[in-house]
Amino acid sequence: QVQLVESGGGLVQAGDSLRLSCAASGRTFSTMGWFRQAPGKEREFVAARGWLASSTSYADSAKGRFTISRDSAKNTVYLQMDSLKPDDTAVYFCAASPRPVRATGYDYWGQGTQVTVSS
Image 1 (spheres, helix red, strand yellow):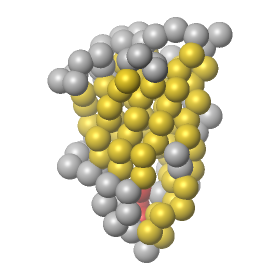
Image 2 (cartoon, one colour; image 1 turned 180 degrees about the vertical axis):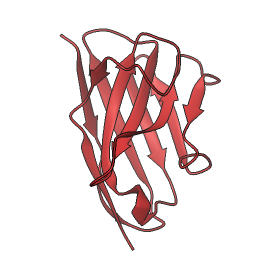
Image 3 (cartoon, helix red, strand yellow; image 1 turned 45 degrees about the vertical axis):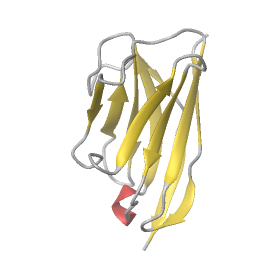
Image 4 (cartoon, one colour; image 1 turned 180 degrees about the horizontal axis):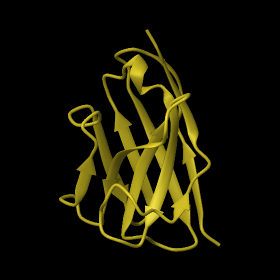
């Protein structure tokens, strides 16, 4: 049975940093990614990472501030978020796919972790 378990969310101030973690169990995936959903908005893509460090994709909102990384030995993906803004407030979801890095087409999802950025 596949499980994705996120951790690391919390309440921070604008300009602070947070690191989210997502541990996968049950199988390995070609691509692991992060999405977020703010209140009243649709879920949106944040970042994705394949097996190689060169195989990454970021949403424009994440470029330059967020870094996705992966520990294959632990079957875990991370999202380092720096210079956080109130607009980053959302529930962040981990997702996994057997397909190459992309912003859509994920088969497995975590339960989400809340990130709240105060001004």
